[in-house]
Image (cartoon, rainbow, N blue to C red):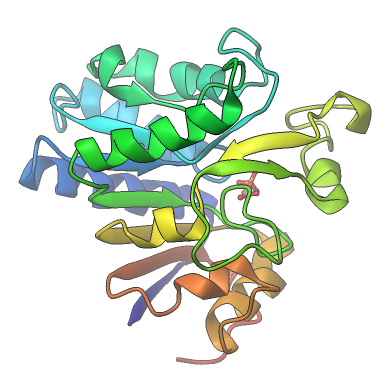
Length: 247
Ligand code: PGA
C-alpha cells in the first residue's frame, strides 16, 4: 500500500524527504541506500548535507547504489550522474567514496558492468531504501515506457521525450549532446528494495503521478509497476498531486 504525503512546495518535499532518509540512517547506520539524480532530488541532497553539517546524520557506514548512468560519459564529465552525485551529496557528507556505487558509463563491456552491478547490490544484502524520481513519461530511472516488470540492470535506449526533458537547459542545453543510451537498474532491481521513497514536484509531473498511482499497473507507465510494493512512500508537492484522485 502506498502512503502519499502532499506538501506545499518543492522545498517542503526536500526537507521531508531528507528527514525521512536521515531517520532511516539513524535507525540503521549501515543502511544500503539507493539514490537517484535529476532536479527533483537535488534539494533533498542539499538538506541531507545540511543535516550532516549540523551533526544530525552520518553517512560513514552507509553504502549507496545509484539508479543509472549515461553510456559513454565518464565520472569526470559534468553531466555524468557520478559527477552529479559527487557534487550534490558525496563530497558534502562523510561517506566513504568506496561505498558509493554508480554504474560506469565507460566500462569496456557495458553488459558485464550491468551484471556486476546486480551482483554488487546482492553482495551488499540488497537495497534497504531506494529514493526515486518519476519522469514526465512515467519512467523510473531510465526504464522507459514498455520496460518489462522483470527487467534488471541493462543498457537501454532513451526515448525522444526523455532526451528533450534532459536538454531543456537544466542539464544539457542541446538535444544532440544528450547520450542516446544509458545503463539503468531495472524495474525488478528497484522493486526488490525493501522500501521505496518516490518524490515528485511541479505540475509537469502531475499526469505521470496520476497514471502511476490511480490507474491499474501498465507497462506504458513504468512507475505504475511499483504500486504493489509493500513499502512505498510518495512525497510530492501540491502541483504534482493536482491530478491525483482524492484519497
Ligand atoms: P527530474 O527527473 O527530477 O529531473 O525531473 C526525474 C526523472 O526523469 O526520473
